[in-house]
Image (cartoon, rainbow, N blue to C red; front, side, top):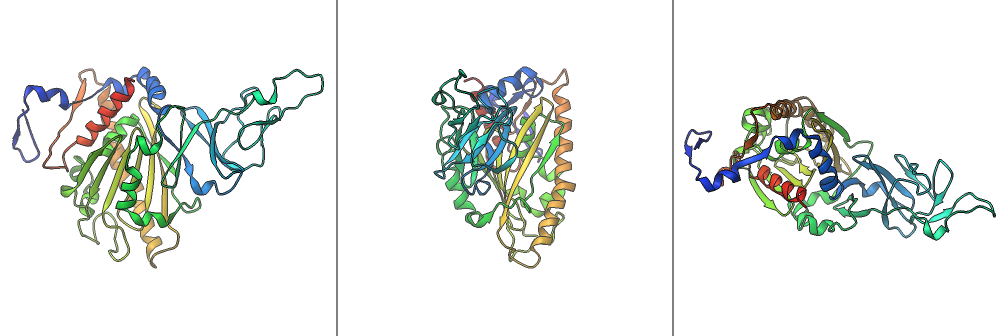
Length: 382
């Protein structure tokens, strides 16, 4: 048996004990697990590539990387979004860097050139040269799809479309936060920065998915939001959390203006390593992506959308106060928790953690963490 925060006793029968055991510690520290994750998760699931506004016209491209696999997305002459491995079939050289616009894709090494649809246009040769026929050479394509205005790629040619892998997600986001349809991605104003922690990528998502630690570890967050009355729902390959506002415009986190600001918080977790969120404050919508840099190290990239024009005279100042609080208060608090837990995973006596599941108190319930782990183990066993 165990005790909850209020001190009352929770009894578990023998058949429920296995369901309350968390992911074994070895999944957070074993190099072989990370190697398997690359093949079974990251190379077989939808990974963020860019925002659609970065591909405005034919030839616009964005080069990206998925754990060492180089890919680029590009808009072709027919205005279709395509994605290819960023490697020249001739000798393996990288074709494109960063972002830009190309009429023709030319390899910097030997000047083999490709059309925007990936077909070979020209390879430098003479009349006596022996080389494969042009129709045998083309760039290797990668699956591409969209969620809202975010562009994703998937290295698995047999992957389900986004609408089937995260069924109902786009409709749920738009129904919950219809105002995001007017938000824009602005590379000059949006926040795109990695937040690194000495903690496994899964442990960082575990932290994102539960608010059991919020009232204890995030005092200002819990003053701004009513963490005791949050709601969580589980879906196929994603989860959703709603935390209502505490109603305090003047709170310990940062000032809010109820006339213009978003007051409540909405978070979606997308298996395996993505999140969407609307945070309290000036109009905002963010995508989060967690990427491993080793078993004990990972970083989170945040891509933010915002209103096309300021909604009120104080919007810019309040937005900066929210960002400053995130950088200087919320993130350091979470990083401290995650890094200490990662050290715990290496302790010889620590085999696995436990879930606390409470259907009547979603503040302390870790049901979304368990849902993540269950989905993770299913995918890893395929």
